[in-house]
Length: 406
Image (cartoon, rainbow, N blue to C red; front, side):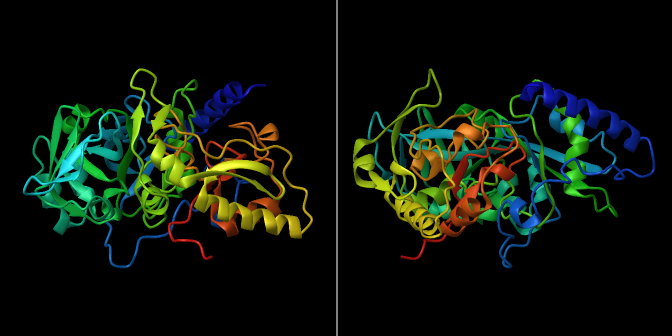
């Protein structure tokens, strides 16, 4: 039985159970579909918000390759769900920027462009923000946007700055804390986002009805029937308030802005006819990407900082005399793929993700990795893709925002 057939059978079963549940008083009486899945510690996507950021009781739902058409509207059929807002997200390519008095900050380096992680939101998005911050978003006009605090610091831009994407200029009207931006670098209203190429619906925010406290995995099971059986990577992830630091799609990996802070921002030439492959500025590659031989896994090509972390993990496995790795995949791959189940720009584009034992861990299949390997990689700073809703048992991606010691 192939993966697509298994997914279709699972959806059919879930749909049958959901109908029974929705027709009864015990809305959340169905058993979790992942009772044999990872522990809560393994499944947690990201740290809780910092104490200084007051988030409303907002829930998040996303599907790895983007939301199916009409998914947000269908969520309201579930009786526990109140209001819903759907957002787009993608990588937009910036050619240049200027500060509030027109002085160039990111100089045009044609044909190389800068990847910017952008989200497009609806007016209803404001109801999912704390009241003091709602006005900034509500007042956004055409071709106006808001930077996250991390993006503003990285760019050296603030209110009044201009960011240029092809023939479109975006005026920056202010900044918001990263947590309120979902970790995205730039927030626009959806029509403005569409004009710079950000069109795919990737996540939805919602409130649950007053007095209810549903289990996230049970909600995911109820949402699953609204994903077509043949939809790519058609699994559902739900986050309860406080469960994730960033309310964004693909929240198990670090947002691009944090990868940029860690590994350095690159410029590249995207292939607009075949989205995915990138021609990265050779100067960035020369400065940061290296090829070395490491214990256990042999020759790899990665970001120099990722190499140091991988060396620690492999030394630990070698010292423990653990034979845990039989095959090795790529570490650095210059791609920005809108169809990637991990998101349109991931740690792999920075040389900070690697496939270990890919020969025995096909995407979507139950993962098969030694626990000692998972633990050694986690200690070195790499999160494991085997606990994703769409499991990728071979994938280990950099998942630590702070600099590693040493």
